[in-house]
Image (cartoon, rainbow, N blue to C red; front, top):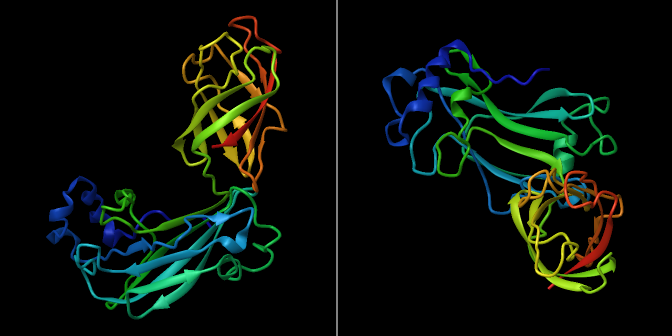
Amino acid sequence: MKLQKILSASLTLLVVLSACDNENFVEENIDRGAMVFISPESDDTGLVNFLDPDASRLNFTVSMTDEQGRDLEFAPVEALEVTVTYTDASEGSTHKQMLESLSSWPKTYDLGVDDLINLFPDEVLTRQSLGLGDGFFITTDFRMQDGRFLSGWSPALLDNSAASIYRVFVNYPVACPSDLAGTYLAECTSCPNGELTSQTVTLTTVSPGVYSMSDITMDVFGGGFAVAYNITDICNQISVASGSRDFGTQIALEAQSTSVVDPDTGVITMDLEYASVSCCGLAGLKVAYTLTPQ
């Protein structure tokens, strides 16, 4: 079932909200619809942990009043149908089920991964078939007191930030948590430049699971010549971005399958090969070292 992203015709006027100031959002042209406000709580994990599904906690509140106390029930609502849409990344398919029909609100949910999996038939989803890159999208449909059924959400409501009234969904990707930012001691295990065997480097978060490493070279270019590079952590497997942050595509690296994060110690093993043919005669040069958290 294709995920519906457009409200029924009775809510099409909500599109104008994207151009309105949040302080003046209650306008006469939306008096026939309704909006939901879904707010993650402090214990919400924000994802389904692929490595440890039981560590996942989906803790959110469904309301029709936003954090500033503004009423989002512009026309009388009979029921809020809280829905869960599962996306199967391997098949490219989506499947939608109702979590609960609410006759009163707000309501806070505190769910585990099995609460979501059990909504779907076994031929759609099981613990064993849950895959990396899958996801769960939670929003609501509306049954209005005048008999109308309003399904989905408007593309005008894309600002899902904490400060916005447009928090009409929560999304839980099946992914691995990553928290590698910090200072590390880099120590060579196999480096072509024997003069430098260790140095201090930092990892800075660029986006979830992506980090900028202050120097990835282990002094291949000579003393004090650092090259920053972006690396990606996907379920404790390290890969490198295309092109260094400092030198674009002039310096290209490939991470080998042995570039990993030890989940117990936090030690990162970097096993790299220079792939660049446009700079410095480095193609084929191999460098290996460990990063120990400080």
